[in-house]
Image (tube, rainbow, N blue to C red; front, side, top):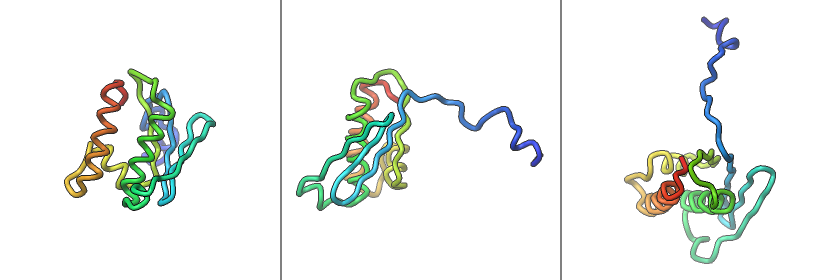
Length: 117
C-alpha cells in the first residue's frame, strides 16, 4: 500500500475557496494578506495590554473585515499561526477563556450573517 500513496488520485481535500486570507498579530499590531494585497494596523492602548491569543483573534477578524467584508455565500480559508486562535474558531469558542470565546462568537456571527463557511 505504501507504493500507492504517492499515486493516489483522491487528494485529502478537494475544496475550493473563494479567498485565502493570511493573518498575524504581535503585541504592537496586526497584519493581513490576501491575493497579493496587504494591510496592517497598530493596537490601541487598551488592546496592547491584551493577551496575544486575543490579539491573534482580533487580528484575524480585522483581516476578514478587510478582505471579505463584501463576500457572501462562499467559503474562505483563514490562515492563522496561533493554535489557540485556530482552536477557538474551529470550536466556536471554548470554556477556559471567556474573552476569547466572546470575540470568537463575534467572528462566527459575522460569518453566519454572510453565509461564509
